[in-house]
Image (cartoon, rainbow, N blue to C red; front, side):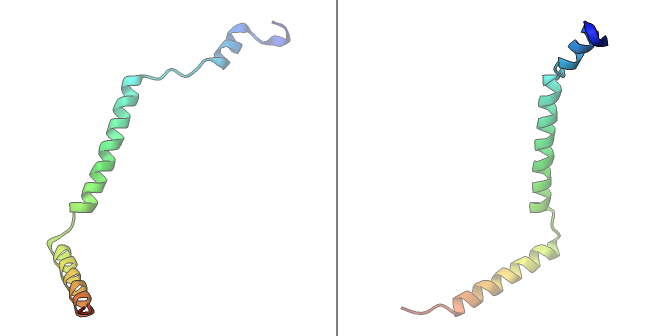
Length: 72
């Protein structure tokens, strides 16, 4: 016990942090739900005009590829 260190202080220094497993599980589930929600917003959260614009661009791309096809 020399050098002014109390046994309690040394014990506290080496104790592990207590983790509530229920809270950790729920926090992980909430983070996964938030990630899925963000993906759904990116996938489905477009306006009708944006969808129509993408469809026209896809049609133009297909027409250009079909026009460049060679007959064999």
